[in-house]
Length: 128
Image (tube, one colour):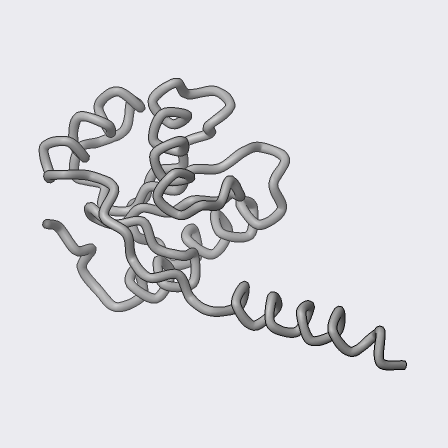
């Protein structure tokens, strides 16, 4: 029985850490850098929310459906089809320590999907 205690405690701690919201991380140095990315990705410059996704990801599909319901402008960039998207994904992965998708950037910051949705529901998209 004792030999099961340590693994159970480790799994519980890991689950708690994974559920903790990610602190925002700045991924663009300036608004101009964000605008340049959007131009390279073929998206309008005034988009505040950028979702980095893959076609096969269920969480990405759920995020896109939720954003669509909110009805505010956003950009969906498939990291497997867009070189600019792949480069931004790599930057986000380095900063977050996670290679999972979706990665969401609002303004200059990468935030978790829940935070991004909350920000989009609040009103006007934040611009740096």
